[in-house]
Image 1: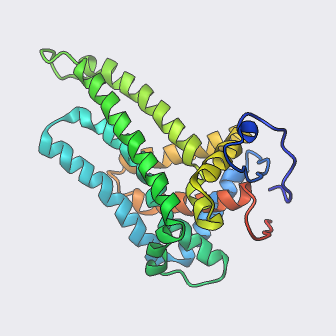
Image 2 (image 1 turned 90 degrees about the horizontal axis):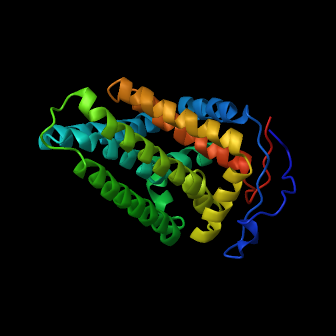
Length: 264
């Protein structure tokens, strides 16, 4: 990883004048894998908290599945999956705190992780509201796609495929938008205590200037989600904390923090 924050040419985000943009580093394509290794070390150092957060992230899709079975509306699966991915960054705040505490050679605790959401409460809840608005907007779009499904057709794969394909494409677009807005926004708010606009623009600038590595990180997150669903959500017990810890290390490797940090 680069040791210094390189001077990055101005772009529309930096020149917008809306808020301050915190400097970022230029990443290499190997950096996301380093974040995973560091996340794995954190998981081994805090196994109980890792299991706790993993169970929470496993219970969420199980609950979604239960709702699908309860309502009998199979087309709710796709919007529910995207909703899960939309609120994931916000729910991961506790895991970011675990990695931060380990980085400071402190012993992480559940109570300290719970309090993390109050560290920059107004702006962190603002981020949560933004994600909820995007989630609601996605649900409305998904409802429109569902409304186009002819009720007289047999519910087989051949008939469902066009609608599932459209939903997948639209859902992928929403997911990329959320990633562009929130990949590191929550860690920025926690560590820097800045306003939401600064965190959003800083995150967007970092993603924009590191398209390759950040798209790779997005693919790794997507792969983890797919593996989790393929294992009937059991994989989330380990994979979601790993992604959460890795995201924290991605943040401190990408965006200038309050303290000088060194990476091997």
